[in-house]
Length: 356
Image (cartoon, one colour):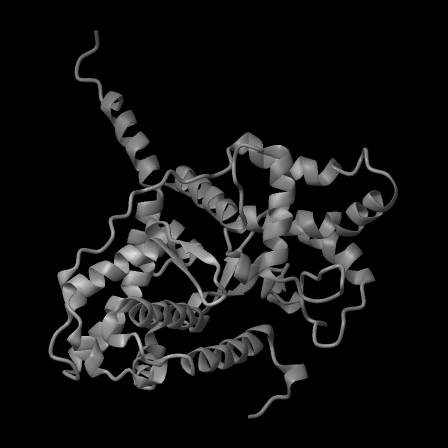
């Protein structure tokens, strides 16, 4: 059934936008690359494919800039056979190049360990497809060590900081006057609802902005989110989230007339449109700066805060993985290994062998 643009849901429209965006990026890649992206579609999200397309484009630009063989090539002259003409040393040179390079707009790009690993992973996947299907006979990416990633300490809010953050949003406007006061009052209930929802459920910021009013079910205190990959799931919330959402819905949200196409959106910007990811990120940073100036808090850190609290409370890594929407429990385990370390330390003194 065809639907007009006005009646499409946020997620349907997002899928269309991402598909069109990927198509336009593919036009800037060698023609044979389309086969790879068609093949990975069933197992990847549109956002992953877009990231991979950008990353693989960097690789071909590197070859045209730095490899004498391809100096006079244009992007559409590359054939799949060019992939097997390269040696492991070419891939190592690319890895070195990725640390600092200039993009199309002559802007300097630097990659951290994580960025480096992602770009190399994209290239390895790209090569792997043609090698597996015997379109090329060698895969030099397998001969190159992947960049080592060092674990970083997870930044999260402590229990008292969570309370301070919510209190600040609640009372931050007490000393404001004029226009700043008016803006604060206009956004206070919305911002409090978003922060309470993120801290009380651990949902992703992309899931939060995709929520429609009808996704909230107060009868069962659950919210229907669309996870990465498009799966729908109900995430349940407690009394504090319920109160914050009701306050927002029955005051601020009720008094606003959304722009056409945004009528269903749960969280609206001051321009009466569905809030975007960037707007929520900026809002979180704005409040967190005041409360925890030494911690760089983002919406994802609020997710980590929730995951940590849930794991400490239940000790059930599978429950945490399920609620956070991690497909692989090892992802969750990696994030919360530090808590396990503390538990193991406690175990050392938990069993008494003899009463002294």
